Amino acid sequence: MSSASPHFRTFRTEIWRLGCGECANQLVELAVVLPILLVLVVGIFDFGQAFTLKQQLNNIAREAARLGSSQPTADLSQTAPPSVKAIRDLIDSDLKASKIDDCGLGDSQSGGRVSRTGTPDQVTWKAVGATCPAGTLTVTIERATSAFSATLNINVVCTHVNIQYPFQWHFNKVIQLIAPGASGTTNPVPGDAVIPNMD
Image (cartoon, rainbow, N blue to C red; front, side, top):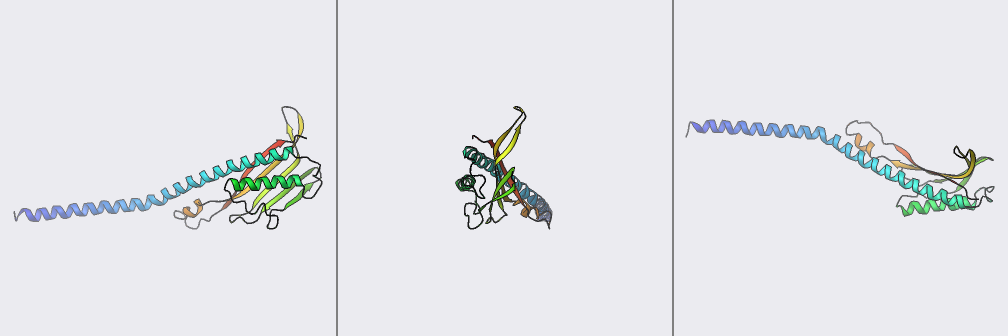
């Protein structure tokens, strides 16, 4: 028994060392793989959020263009026509209903004012939401723009609504685990719709 005891102790020590070596290897593998896995998961989450936001903005722009297409065009010579304000107000209420930050778009005091730009034949109105933490929300409304229809070979007077919503990527914060010095960016997510005017 006494002669087997030193061999057993040596065997047990070797098994213990082998086990700790495997633990160390597993810890090193985890340290290498975890940041990559985290970047991948956050990237999937971010792109999913951006895609969902784009679909929501397209739906909001489509509904706003549909409203604009049914509005009269007699007030378009004004600096801030009521028909354009109605489109802005609809976009603002739809953003709130979709639980998207409206960035103060409906508040004409803080930045949701409608301003007129463009030439007499191509007039656009812009409303800017100024209180977004990630950037600036911009809504561009063209009430009397011409869209050429290739199938009918005619110009159709349309309402065009474009929404540029600032989106803060979380992916860039996590990528710093792999590439230190990478900075976070904000990219606008667009929503766009064009519908022929009814009048």
